[in-house]
Image 1 (cartoon, rainbow, N blue to C red):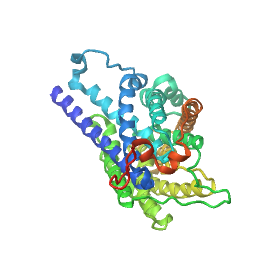
Image 2 (image 1 turned 90 degrees about the vertical axis):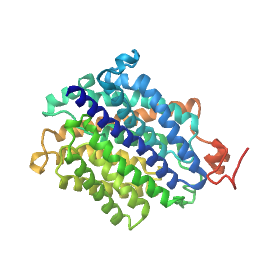
Image 3 (image 1 turned 180 degrees about the vertical axis):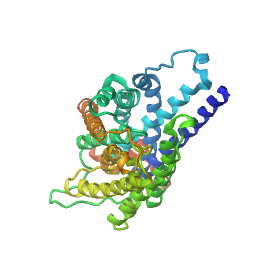
Image 4 (image 1 turned 180 degrees about the horizontal axis):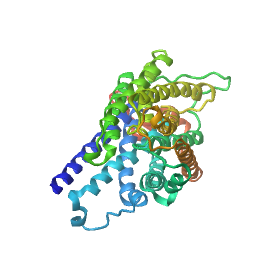
Length: 400
C-alpha cells in the first residue's frame, strides 16, 4: 500500500509538471501574438532556450539553494521513493522557469539574446531560489519570525508572490534599464502604436496558459491526498472574474480580454487553498481591473514600454494576490483561516523589494559590462533577422 501511495504521488506530481511545462508554450504564443511580426521567431526561441537554461541552473544550483537537496549522488539513491524528489524538482523547476518567461514579455523586441540567457541563469540559479526557500522551505527564520510577530507565517500556496510578483518586478527593472522601443515615444509627445501582430496566436497562448494553470494551482498540493477541489473552483472563479472585469474596463479590446483571465489566475494562486469561491471571484475581478488600469497608465502616461504588461499582470496582480490571501482567507469572510493580513503584507513587500533589487543588480551589471540592447539597425530590422537570420515567413524574408 505504501509503494502504491508513493507511486500515485509521483504520477500526480508528474502530471502537474507536464501541465505547467505546457504553460511555457502559452508564454511563447502569447508573446508571439503580441509582438510585431519581425520579432515573432525571437519570441518562440527565447521561451524555449530560457526554459533549457533554467532547467540546468535549477538542477545544479537553484534546487540546492532553495531546499538543500543535491542530485550529486548515484541513480540508486535518486530512485528512492519511486524518484519522488526528482519529479518534485521537475515540477518546481517549471515554476522557476516561469520567472524569465515573464521577463521575456516585458523586454521583447529590443533585448539581445545572450545577455538575457545569462540573466536567466543567475535569476533561476540564485535570486529566485533564495526567495523560494524563504517562503516554501522556512529558510533563514523569516517565516518563524512572521509567525511570532503576527500569529501566522506568510502564505503563498501556488506562487502569486514567489513566482509571479518576483517575475513581474524583475521585469520592471529590466524594462527600465533597457528603455522603450525605438520611436515608441516621440519627442513631440506623440505615442506610436505597436499593435499585436496576431490576435489568434495571442488568444491561443492565453488559453494554453489558462488550462495549464489548473496544474499550476491544484498540483501545488504536491501529494495526492492533499488535492483540493476548492483550489480548482477558486482558480476557475478568479479566471472568469478577471475576464469579465478586463472586457468591461477594456471596452472589448481582445488584448485585455485575453489577459484578464491571466490576471485573475495570477492573483488567486496565493490563497486558492483558503478562500471561499466568492472571495476568489472578487480577487479575480480586482486583478482584471488592476491590469487594465495599470497597463494603460504604464504605456500611455508613464511611458514605460513593457510590451506584454509583465509588471502590471504579474508584478502588481501577483502582489495583490498575496494581500488578497490575507483578506479573503479570513474566517470572517468565508475563508479557512490560519492566515494573517500583516504577514501577507510584510511578505509581499519583502518579495517586491527582493525582485526589484535582483532585477536592477543582474540586468544593471549586464548592461554595464556586456550591453543589453540591440543596435538601432538590428532593432529596426527586427530580432528575427538580426539574431536568428530568418523571419516568421521565410519565403519572403531571409538574411544570410
